[in-house]
Amino acid sequence: MAWYDNKKKLTHVATYKNEKAASKDANRAAKKGWMPQGTAATDGHVNVGRTTLKIAALGMPFLISGASRKKGKITITYVRTPEWLEANKKK
Image (tube, rainbow, N blue to C red; front, side):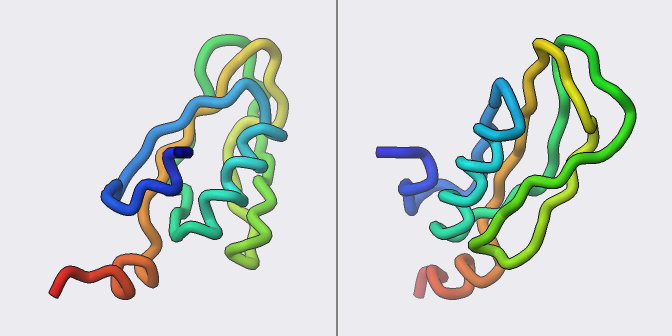
């Protein structure tokens, strides 16, 4: 089971090797009620700038810092969307 399929989790931190992998996972997670809350670039060289993860399921782009990266990693902290929290509120 993928981390974004776990209905008991409310937060998750994921690390990716590149923006393509991060965007792919972000789209899958968005369909399951997750949204990126914060990002960080680690290791390697980071050019100052911005890049956008395309999260089609949320209907909006998510801006992250670091337009280009060489041999570095991207860490994204995910949280549940307010809509998911409301729909899955324990009674």
